[in-house]
Image (cartoon, rainbow, N blue to C red; front, side, top):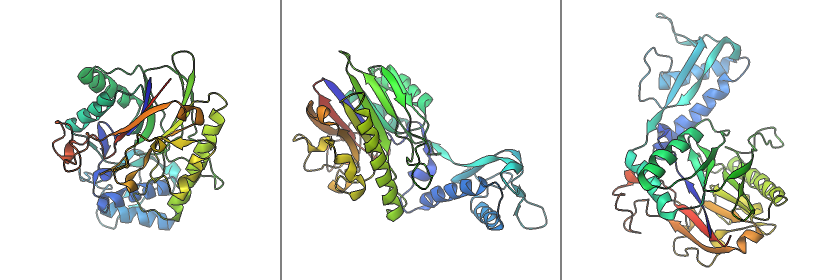
Length: 365
């Protein structure tokens, strides 16, 4: 038997502080401002409108100051040259005229994640013990290796010899990767795939991991994390998710040329019946939620498990579906005691392993 799972870890040791705020708070604004700031400074020549906006946002976050406030969500990292001119007598202004005049960038302040939350993340994984685990929102491969060694192995005696994360397009350190008990024999990245407009398709990446199973069969695992609805779900967001779904499905179809065992998994940030995800369930592919053992009362994989919160997936090729034995959702790492009994180490929401629940499936392989 082989168990495959997917889990949005929501980072392991550090996480952008702005992403830990309520949905309608200043944290959401900071994420937008961070993206806008890095867009402005990437220009070869800075327009006056761009300079005015830099000044305006610096008045909000004070990153031009000699000692910026430690609690600011957005920070300026300056390596060489000068971005701002801040004379003693006179208004703040932008000294640089373009990208070549200085070296630096803007980043989101990161806060440490509580040890109990990290421990409970490990406990969720240990309790389900997947052979192959798709991980979403992980900082980097070195961080994931430390988690494997210092949490999964040291605390739970659970070992994953094969660990891989490819840095993607998201500057916040929320990438996708894989833990495997079996060798990863081939890796393909789609971080540079571009759509008709010339922009990158995937918010992070859509890597392909070919895994050598006992007996010589090959399994192709395709993790992903589609465009979120955090900043709203306007037409542009839906179109981005649809482009990601369409391209991911093309990648899975091509992978069938290497193996008839293909699984696309991760946090796709939309419900199964949503138009943007429709292409994923064509050409013989289906989610594990189609199996009779899948929970009916609370089918969601996020929050309280409502139907509208079904956003994590294991989408299988036809041959993999024919070998599906069982499926389940591990919720005990999330504190909702009126709905289910959490682990005894999850005593309040701050102890949550994640807002997401681990989705697992067993196969006759």
